[in-house]
Image (cartoon, rainbow, N blue to C red; front, side, top):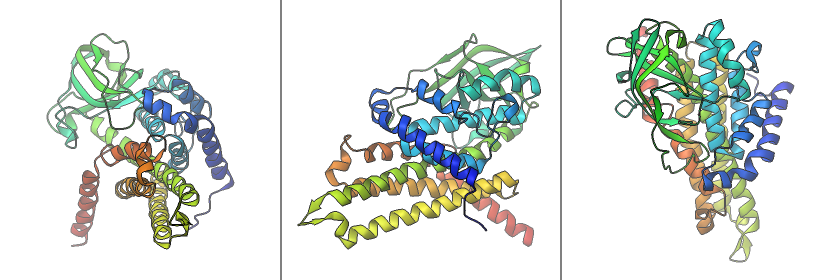
Length: 384
């Protein structure tokens, strides 16, 4: 094992860190307070190759790996968790088109997604199908060379703002094998959006329901074959889980760094808070938890890049551990700041609000435990 980053990886990380410090961090509080979707900043990120990180280069992507993406998203999230997380979802949607689309689809959709001239959303969850995603009801019925779509998707990041919606829809019978993946373009008649959701965090990205009513989409917008949709969705989520785990690392690290500064400045009982051993121990635990989580994220990302058959297991483990650790570190940072941590004048309360949802999306951490347990029990059965 070699945990030393290559020269190229260090350069990628530094580029992402410098960009986040310059373009994300100074604006993050305002984006959160005013619920601004920072289109210009996102397009600047795209200009650095951060909108198609592991999309192939022939359509404008960066052609990098999942490990590189994990480095990038930790750095971007240290500047603004919410904006980095939307960029993660956009990358996941773009990769699905690159991986499962035909050449015509790749060349039609990906150049504008890689530049963020167009934005993308991932549409799996429904009002009645959350963790039980295979029970989704939104239906696409084929009529000649078109699908007619009816139904609704819930909690869609970029809802109303995105240009391309990568949708999992039922084209066949019940269960996962009846689901297909279809691209729906903004402006298609019959496509509409619910009201913007009012959320605890993630306020720099819009979230809404995506609604379909007699929405007609050409069959040529289907990715893969009929019935491939659930497999496509799950493969997308392996990488998405690494990315959102990395975003939790970034939010946690920013909170730890804020705590280090605060403890070095604040005086109580005649001493700097940093001189109290009890508080030193808490910083030490926060740093240790983040480093352990980072190693799990890196292992999962490296496994996905290498085609490891256990990559799904490691992605679930990393997502579960890193998102729990990221939130715990943000929460501890708020406590170390005392009453000031509860004020919006300090960034830790925003980090806490933004990372909290990471324990829910891309598969709840309870579902991560289900994935892990099933893999473990399947291994036991094979050895029996």
